[in-house]
Image (cartoon, rainbow, N blue to C red; front, side):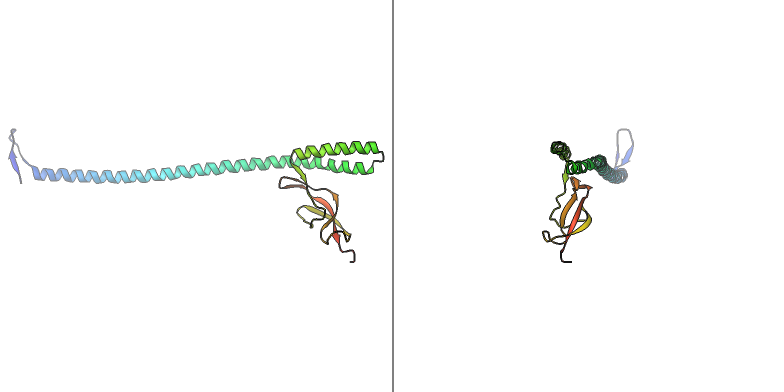
Length: 181
């Protein structure tokens, strides 16, 4: 040990004091390192919580947008479905009117009405000669014919309509069957 006497007359034992200070420093350093590790873990947890919250909010926003779009389509579908019956009424009126000028007037109104429906995304379902599809066609009977393969649509009684991929009104059709049966 190194004992020296200084001006103030106090002798100091450096090696034991140094050891004590080093011990205090290493204990303090260990405590600080532990605290730093805890803070890092806490920061990582908060970062993950923030990312999850952000993802949850993004999913919520997307779900709300989808639901709003579905509500918009359903409201539009309801109105268009009511209007589609007028298209059928125009067709029936045209068939029953005897006066050619009146029939031509009804035909013009029907065409303008159908153009309006087309403008709003309504499309007719192509069905003549197509295989019967219960998701798009409403079969109202059979017709014996050799002009069309069995199980296919031989006659369209009322047209069907779609708004995009959404069925508004199924086509009412007569399905072909073998004339020999």
